[in-house]
Image (cartoon, rainbow, N blue to C red; front, side):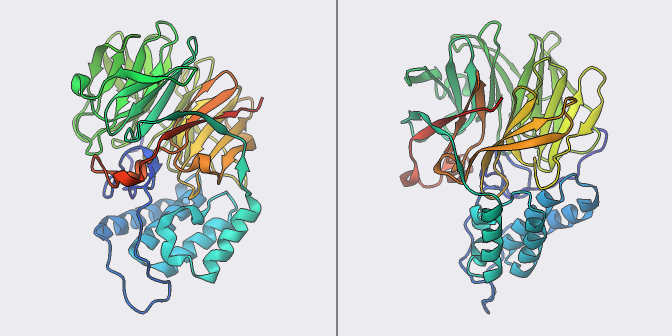
Length: 429
């Protein structure tokens, strides 16, 4: 990166999301919804401060210092409100929320359990009503497949366009399953095989039907780029190019010999050369913060990288980097999954409070959002989505990854586990 990013630590929510004290994993990406004490906003007793108070204070200072330069003020305000609520500072949380909601970008505090202490406050209820009036629920998707293996805690999803087979990675069991068009589920890579780390991003090479995968360890140790042949045999594995913490998140393939991937803990985007087996850092116009979703235009010339505060476009022909303009009353921040489709970007945004699947139509140069189509919002099918895959004009995505029930590489409450639902929605031309 041209500018070394400040070390912002997102509170672990859903892949909602991040590990306290570091920009942790999947997003699920951008805040894991940790339940807070049920203290009321004006309660006399002072609630016990959370164990990560020092990290939260540091993050608040950093975000406030960055506010004048950030592409999306709403995303920063929502993060500040979340952190203040976590610390029990309900007055500051409400103040930041008011400023955020006034921008009318689509942030919905009702979907974030961090705001539990504010729910009885009239001001909070009025803010939620305002958001829901401006952004009503949208339900266009339906369940395509149900995977009965409840303890997968999936993160990555990919499709083989020739066979129409889906591949889904597991954070908990550290394996990859395949799903046929008839819904049959079987192991592509077994649990314990090859001693893999938690599986995040997946992509199928359309040429030889091989599968590339990223591993995303929460502690930043042992991240790898993996290559499997069409039978599931591990043929290659590559470690990060530098020391320090690394979390390989999502990836795209450009031809046969180029792979671009996001490193959410190192705050970097890498280009991997398959011929030389070398990683090189992609230089960007600004520092990025928890880079996650990544997409490539059909012609292979435009790379899009999503982070906590927006989406960057990198022109791979000349290396020029520019911020994508979201337009007024809209946010393109917090895209866990990001995909290119007919000069538009498909995004799974799970850091808005209530998650949504959205399609952003772009200007001819791909630098400005010209229209927003909400595909799924405030429905049971976006309970905890992370990533998806496009097949034809259909978008498949995981509806209930349950990453909020997974912490320190363990299932928190096995009794709450349920079958994984993969939903599908028609994209707009």
